[in-house]
Length: 241
Image (cartoon, rainbow, N blue to C red; front, side, top):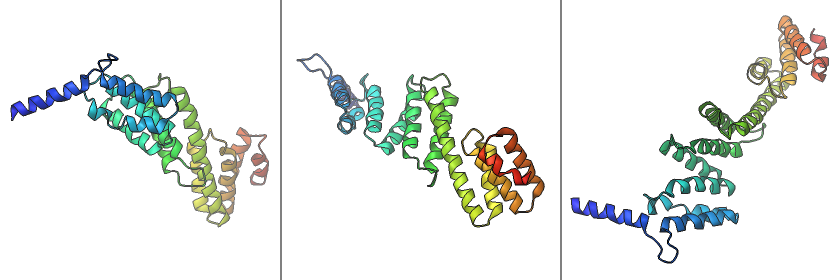
């Protein structure tokens, strides 16, 4: 039995190091370059398929990890975001200290980002994207992907704030002022840097006013007026002062 295992190992090693006599390149390098050529021609689905069994075919090649990274890229560019998500997670799990692990984390975040929905719809993937971008920035603050990560994180916050604003206004329109106030309060607490903050403050003040909590309505309107004196929402909140 030991001999069989040994021969199997040698066979795998040989497969990973087999060389084409005409080019002098290993089979692994030829396969990798074929996939890379497909990517260079923007044939991303073809490249993704070519790389599908690369690790199994060439488990000991120096191109194996490069092929994993290339497959993440090609699947993303080909619009296969669920696959990108899976491949990126696998890369991070297998190579937590690899020099390019920040790229895999960035692509994981981008796969969630591309699957996220407008503010009117469910925000599960938006929240997933926020979590993965925050992880990237925490683990790799000096990464070349950090700047874009921060920019996209702000866009995601804008979307989440817009979602809370939409839900809050729905409750407000249904005279469910406690539920509405909870949504607007969340905007004030978590999304102060988003465009929704001014309108959120106005509706929070209006919700307090509707509930008869006049002091809270006045304090919220004062906060709105102090921070955004020229806002149309500040002017609308003047009756609460």
